[in-house]
Image (tube, rainbow, N blue to C red; front, side):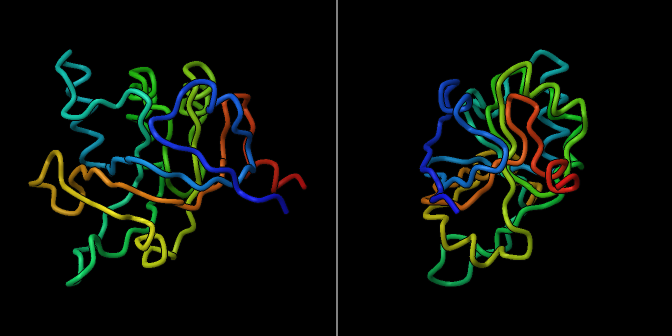
Length: 181
């Protein structure tokens, strides 16, 4: 098995072009969080032609609702949530420059088409490993929608966050490949 490659945010088109379905990566840099309610608000702002509360160009959104931090920790458990719940809003965010998403589960064809058209990738994080993944988060702060509690948008600083590319810009789909193979 090949060693994971290190990548850094913000992601650019050259890095995206080198990522293929099945590649293991260690992601370092800033990642924003967002779940259903936050995505709905972002989508509504886009429909109204209003600016987003964060600049998503080149960024990665992690579909997670972290638990509160225990004393001495920067964040609580931070495992991925089911990505399909964000599918209705995701193509619009990708069209605005979002370059990566982290979650678990399959994506809709509309999301896959948007990834190919605009150049974005979907990373899978290991479900059920939220406490372990939280150890790779070095800093966390709420930057938008604080009223949503754990579903607020957090700005996370991650180091060597372990992921695998599920969907790439060439139509590669690890889940489909594993079903066939």
